[in-house]
Image (cartoon, rainbow, N blue to C red; front, side):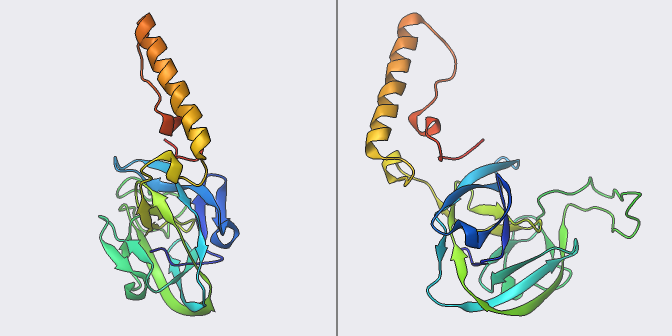
Length: 207
């Protein structure tokens, strides 16, 4: 389950976005794909908790921070899971990016040599607030703007009818059009990758 404060910033396709502004919505969010590359997958719909909960402020070595519930799971380097309540200063987390190993930017002499991690600087209680949660398509992971990789629920729609962005009628039209293109291609000998109905529908993910 995702446990994010309303002011938590996540890496949406339009740029850093406060989770509280996404209530009831879905949005492509930056994630690490199964092949290890970065890409976007649909996250949402975002739901708000019925009661306030205790929050922690997790600050990273880059000076950026995020407020989360204690049960929010972060990923250590190597994708080991750790709850926010268990994080300690110095913990090495999976980053959205880093310089090549051992590189130190000449204009940042105080920066430690890169090692493919981002370190926790501090974890402190930071009041109470509403908690927002949402699943993400395929990966079950998403990047916060602070640079850390966090865990979300995973969903895999079994059909377009189960996607709130697509009506049954729209799905039927799209599937029929796709089938017609496939038949035309087979009759004319056209080759090349065919596009499935799911990939033709807006809102079903990117990449």
